[in-house]
Image: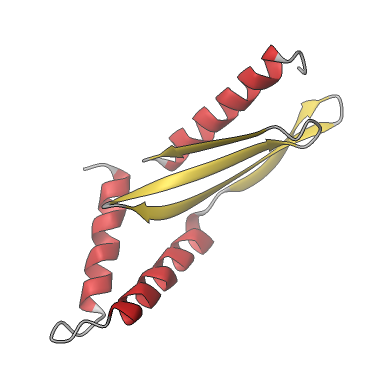
Length: 114
């Protein structure tokens, strides 16, 4: 089972066991889900900054979220000099960062910014 699906299953089990099954309060369920997602992102979200040369920095940030029935990672990469931004949504955190940076560098190269 993929990591995203495992995380989604764990979140779903925690959410449903933390509410009263006899009378599900969807506002309570939503609050519990948001608390779990916030905790997950505080513990495992990745942020970083590195230089690409010429005094320009690239920043990236990943966050996880339940999308449908799967837990997916969204990565946002930004070139600070040009303002170019790339967004990738993937099932694995590492893949989201890798594809985000690759696409951003391809866009920079096509503009002659590298």
